[in-house]
Length: 132
Length: 132
Image 1 (cartoon, rainbow over the protein chains, first blue to last red):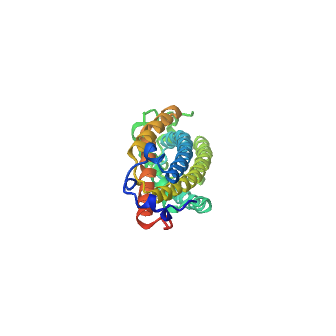
Image 2 (cartoon, rainbow over the protein chains, first blue to last red):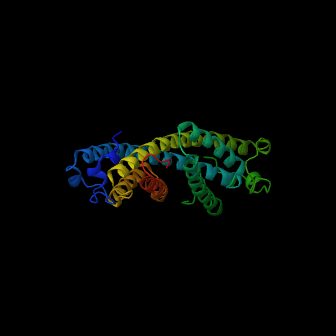
Image 3 (cartoon, each protein chain N blue to C red):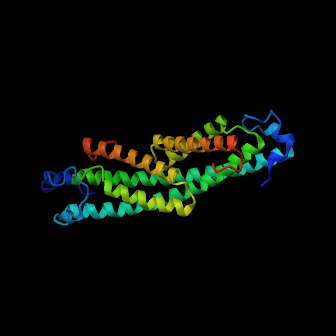
């Protein structure tokens, strides 16, 4: 990777500091233009990953909506701490193996579990045919 | 889907209310056993989706780590509000088309963008070779 810190005409330029990426300005400097090009490529990959994750979240919430209805109908509690502990241990292993900071995976799991429990509690209170 | 609310021997049983799923108890009632079986299947799918999402998050954070380094080297700001607005609009469309409650997608985007910005700020302060 190019080390811009060795390129005084880039790192010493106040024009670039604390600004968002500006294509017009970027074209004036070939090294910065190269960085902008790579950032644009990476952003496309990030957008593709986000679209995939949001699509998977849609499937995940369809599954958990069905679990919520089945639990409410059978009278099971919305919360299941043992299940949550198994999920946490398993996902931690997936994160470590995939090279992801486990704190990010923990935050992800906390976010989905909190959201799902809120919906399951709503289903349990309002009935399986509610709009939870 | 079986409607357990019509099954008095299930819905009237205090044993099931507010309890986590218990396989031993579940086997005593065929209808509940069927629900437990379906919940087990759904949980396996949920676990598969979670593993896929965590693996994708690992890739996402590799991409954003590279973006962070390039931005720091070129002197670009860690934050880019226009980019964030475009991401939000695009992902909202993905969520709606996939049948996901947009509030879940918004929560997801907020979580990753906040985490990435924190890391980019760390890289900008500590240098591209930091452990951010």
